[in-house]
Length: 96
Image (cartoon, rainbow, N blue to C red; front, side):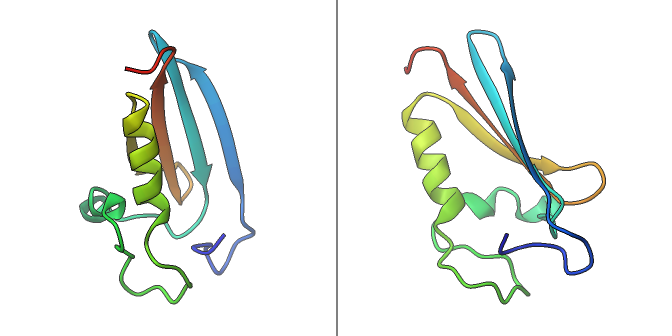
């Protein structure tokens, strides 16, 4: 909710589906979005998007990366059709 788009009501949707021997979970929003050139950096600790005044320390997605990685999964950011971002993470049925 920190990075909501100023001109539209906030929407967040979470879905899950089978992905091979595991699950793919998608959390999509209609917020400001994350530019493609910044998507890898948002997983670094203490990294925040330039030009935002939202409070925080830049630990949210880096914490998600560590959790998913320790369970043998992967995580990425993609565009959300209609605006915003999708964070997609995969987890195996059994941790690595």
